[in-house]
Length: 393
Image 1 (cartoon, rainbow, N blue to C red):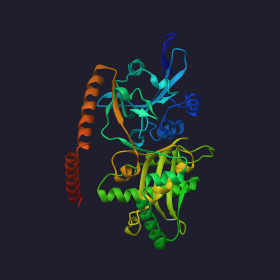
Image 2 (cartoon, helix red, strand yellow):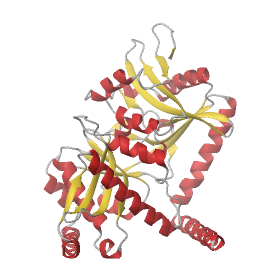
Image 3 (cartoon, rainbow, N blue to C red):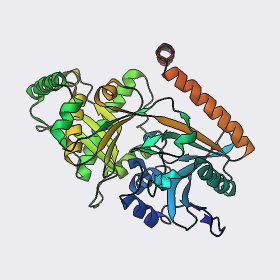
Image 4 (cartoon, helix red, strand yellow):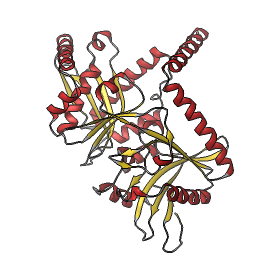
């Protein structure tokens, strides 16, 4: 641990292991005043870190002049283009990379002051730059200080406010016509395969079974698209399993896995998994059975309707479906969660890295937000996959 020891001034502590900061972290996240996303839960971060044991971990704890903790920012430090770059733990598996703030008042930190403390800490660690992606500009109505200096991200996230009445929530989210169509599709699924049910994994055996179905379904989908399967690597599977397993815990697992399953034979028709805390379900991944006899009944949409009802019934106030554009997201959600990218240079080479990073993000955003450019890129990728496929054969 390294600490700025200047008396009576805000400080930055740096921890290189979870055990040293666990008690403080869990204490902050248990406080109802804390401001954080489900991806800043200690258990979620701990599960992810175990999937990358060879990557340097640095956990920054910002304290005010009285020594009270204001924010926790867990980072992985890697070499990128010859430089040490710090990124918030979670990579693309976390929809939001916001710090854990002790309270809304702590989130009122001036961006300039927050960044300066990180720069001072970064110099002691040989960090050239911080690259913080997926920063919400606002979270639960409170401004994120890192978002105030951020460029808009290439893609936003999509969220949904949940009513305390689950029936009212479902009626708000799904039109009468949509609910009628889903009932008809579920009826056809039942006629073909027998009774089906919505299930949330409550045991390690259920977690294992639902995730196995997810990996099989997702592999088939990626193979059909000619895309490399990001879930094929064992460390990523270990992370998801570790986050989802109960391990004797009485509280919620860090990752919740839900499935639409057949009651006769246990066939899994669709899977949805997300990071959770007391107030929010944040979708991380979804899949459905590619068998035409199943997929024509839209099992993923059926599962999503059950998921929305269940999360509202259990008292969660919000549900989001993650970063990126998709029909089911825009059809379901009533909120666009605007995200930003902020790069904090520490050294001169870090400034050059920041300029390149910001420039690349702006180009990517322009392509994603322009339908004609997006269509052109998709055609180029399809052509490239077709060429590679012919070469393999």
